[in-house]
Image 1 (cartoon, rainbow, N blue to C red):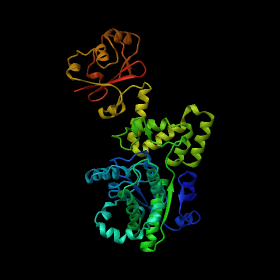
Image 2 (image 1 turned 120 degrees about the horizontal axis):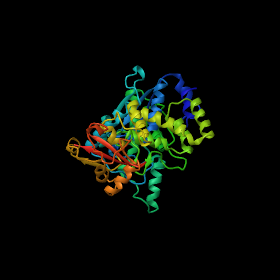
Image 3 (image 1 turned 30 degrees about the vertical axis):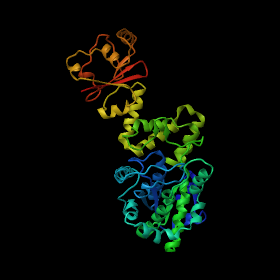
Length: 430
């Protein structure tokens, strides 16, 4: 199966500039393709996964991917798909964010693969030196205003303003299209890039770059888009009550990331398997059939969670996520360090004790349950222990009068208490 045929089967093609010829064009020889990433934070999120996956698939097929981090365009903000203008970022914030994104991209793209090695570039490097007058003279004159006004990203914002809704569009945002379009021209000149890929909301910006390449350099450039990552109800994938699902372990722990995909609805899991994983068509169809026969097993969700957690957080992150899942189903807590336990139990009550309470033997399990908030009184704590409902590191407590010692630590300084099936508390001894 050709690259484009595989992308189509996986649902990763929304539009192309040349449906009839782009497949043959890609098969002729290796091409250079780029996609842009917005540095509004120091981490990418689930919404960025499709861009990384598409570039990864192009590289695996022998093409050269370029990831463009918008150090310049990020100072303005893309108006596409937005109802209000973004807050502008400082240069310092952008530099920190750009560095963070580059580190994450190395998990998806091979930057040492010979002729098809991926490259990471920052568009501030070529946009920054321009003066305002030079940019207007050399680039701006090639943009017919009527064409810009016809773009959906502009029309939708101006339409809201005319209807009395929203704030319209500033000249700053209106200029964004020029900057991204010039990226394509620059990348063609310096890197031989002939294809830009992006989300479906980027179609106007992509075609603007193609038009600018024709006007400025007389070259034929191409574009394709993938559909936005949404659920079957039309809402964006990667959103939780706590906010975005990030690719950074510091923002979204491997356990939380794994659990997000474990809990994907049956109506959405096939699309996620096709679009986001590298599982074969045969395996995905086998999972689909198994789900139809017994949806309760959630094998599709488990495979999805495994594949994506491994890709984003590597084998070590997957192992921690799976271990955490086992722990919440009652597995004994062992072979984890302070940082891992803190991640796993980030959302449970925590209590700090002086380490001397362990070494001096004056912290009973009864006191620990009360002080950690797992029992309202010592009487309730005694009843919980007597009924077999108290656990230290998921090991049942047998003696009502037991004292906790350093032997009860699950890691260097952390101990985990549990009352009943689901009430946890994290104790830290310092």
